[in-house]
Image (cartoon, rainbow, N blue to C red; front, top):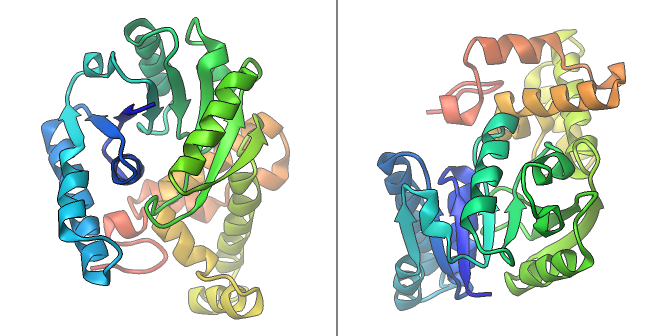
Amino acid sequence: MQRIGVIGGGTMGNGIAHVFAQNGYEVTLVDVQQEFLDRALATVKGNLERQVKKGSISNDDAQSVLKRINTSLKLESLSASQVVVEAATEDPKIKLSIFSDLDRLCAPECILASNTSSISITTIAAATKRPDKVIGMHFFNPVPVMSLVEIIRGLATSDATFHATMDLAKKLGKTPVAVNDYPGFVSNRVLMPMINEAIYCLMEGVADREAIDTVMRLGMNHPMGPLALADFIGLDVCLHIMEVLHTQLGDDKYRPCPLLRKMVAAGYLGKKSGKGFYEYR
């Protein structure tokens, strides 16, 4: 496997493209607007420059990484890919449409992976005629730094697809963990209710934002408090995942906090919007 397709040039997609290209793979990055692709390449370039300053790679290596990332506005450019990793907007309709198109465009042996953080891999796979070749490959932000990748098997994912994807993650220097297809997988099923409960604590006046985050950082040895982490992830993303957990598991312990809903409605999405539980400039 040398030709990798990545769909979506956002926070996750550009990081995924970066990691594959840095490990010698030829990457085609696809998005719907040129400005998104330009921004993605600028982000990769900036991250590579930081790596050069730290001495982790040479300037020549950084330039080689950039040369291995090609961009396109057309899904058809992924037809020769051996693996495609989808990192588009976390919207089921968008993802199902993308996978249906990929199934038509890509060779039968191509593995189709999704970076989804909450949507069922089995549901995504059902949009194709190759459900055995569909798998979840859930990276973590920032992708070049975080070592974990959840490898999620759908109901029809074959052993061959699973083992090939596990090996691929290891070749990226990542630590892959096998996970079955349940709402939120492991990471978000454990993490998001904790974040949601922290928001309830804030809403109910148990403590202020700094106190809540300090308790979890110093008392539980977390590197970042849950409210700051929610800002980093994006409050809209947190809300979406909680809604998926609440709907699919049917348990009120996953009910999104009303304050979370209110903040998303107000456009306070966290770091990316400049304001969430904290302010950013």
